[in-house]
Length: 203
Image 1 (cartoon, rainbow, N blue to C red):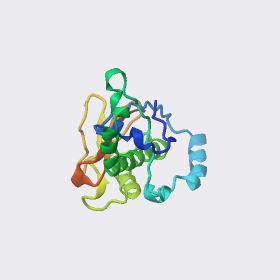
Image 2 (image 1 turned 60 degrees about the vertical axis):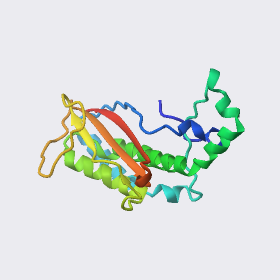
Image 3 (image 1 turned 45 degrees about the vertical axis):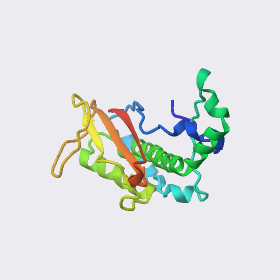
């Protein structure tokens, strides 16, 4: 289940994400072979295709969605009540906000790829380029300050992970393929702040 992204910033809870760096998410998508009716419907929907807008423009106050907060339990509850600990956590707000920005970029790019990019017949190079260009747009790529965290992985079928197409690779996503997409976005890379998730495509 995707985390809730509607919660407002709560300063006494931000420390729950201090050690958060990567996560794994599996999304299964069934893609039908194109039919004449589907093609016509797709042509009509092309006019309503997603317009990619930088997340900083979507959140003018630069406070990005917090996501799901998991409270400490049992003997660790003191971390939520100790005033010194809470003050230390508030000092990390900027770094945590960078992580949340990268997470929001990742969420929107994943949704865009699932909705408008992935389909049987697309080459793996085209898939990766469209995904990475969307990431660059939403995160407003700026050297080491923001951008893609690493080359996109798009491992097919028996390949478990870390396959990235090179120039000239003509591999095509076919109906019946299982594709593992692994991509990341970073903000202020010099602080090693990034957000990395993977998802599964079943065509």
